[in-house]
Image 1 (tube, rainbow, N blue to C red):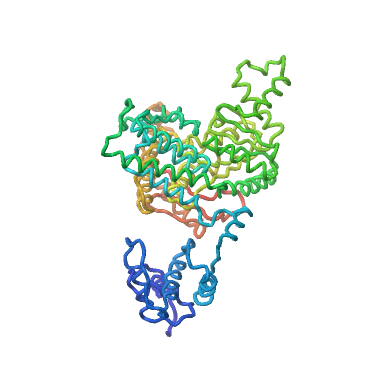
Image 2 (cartoon, rainbow, N blue to C red; image 1 turned 45 degrees about the horizontal axis):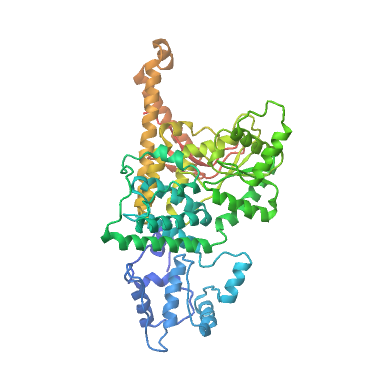
Length: 574
């Protein structure tokens, strides 16, 4: 190949190297096999292509005669999956062929692999490594699919949407949070099948402290109102029985998972968070928010084994654990005869726990009960172990620490399931649109005010989780949600501006603008020039979205002042 490679040729070559190909196109395997040390035969390539031809197929059987290279055919398929960045590939082979497979994958296809047998598997678990088969993800996927079912006998129709959202929240929180709830659902459904009682979920909601408040906020008119016990029709009993058995399997799987990868990562998050506090000069204190009391207990137990024993306080709706009672008793004794004791048992106990956190403990693990009514300006680290979908709840959480009297920047750490496309888009909206995790706190006021109700926003997200199954459907649904939110926000701003103009005295109006038309023309020109200068100045340091008049700042081109990276929006006046 002669001549100079121009940028246009380079672009064409890049396209050819990366473009998607048909399943039966031999070019599909070029990149994945370009470094393989095997002499491929046509029938081997054809067999591998056959395995990929039907995306709806649940598998393929490679059954060539002995010596014709079935291992090579499987290696081609594995190489293609590896080239597509798939890393969860499982080979189940006879025990006497384990080493042969391991060696041939390494020698002929340069694919790394690990041999897992009963002894090494058990050793992994004992040494603290998580289950290599990733039951956590399986549980998450299976329960998510179950919740998308058109009809669920274990959930009363009058609470279907609300309970589905709560179950998703518990599922995201921890396997410990969801396990008990799944078993209770199975037991309730079994009792209903036997004609003992209708499925009512008030006691199941004990796992999720905010149930009563959420039920009142949701009050969904789209759902049928609660009715009395209705027997399951005879022709549907088989389906209900199948659902009960499915719930029992889910609960059994959850009970076998003794460590959660999310919980293991908490120690790393705290270490990094405390390092940041040390840089700032802030006290070594953190509040960890979860939406489940079971998860709260689980986090306490794992942190106590990692050097935080005696440094943790819990805060929830009852505050009735043994340590909290002890803290309260000491607090009463210390403040006996003073006006610090209000006489309200619950209020005084809450204050006792806050005082203990301020004066003695390092970590407070809290449910949503701590998101309002307490002052924690002595703490500068907020960990959202479970992230609410309602942005106003997140603001309330951070507001416990970021309030009058806080002397340092508040550090916020969020836990996100990167394997879930919907979770990622929720976080993107909360971060980029609501500006909840960067910049000056309070910058989200304009946005939060524009959406009117965080509950409505929460419902719309819940609907996406229920209705969308593929990553593409999730992305499209969130794009629509984001666009409608932007439209609502702009409408709110326009209405506010109009109200301000209408209520100014004429004299003030004249001082602000010579006349409305000239003012509009001037603002339009100003915005265009500002946009042009911004584009020029940040060239190479930001990604610009011209249709939205927004950009994402990737790097700060200035030494001073400090500018937060992230998404910025030009507020158009017209």
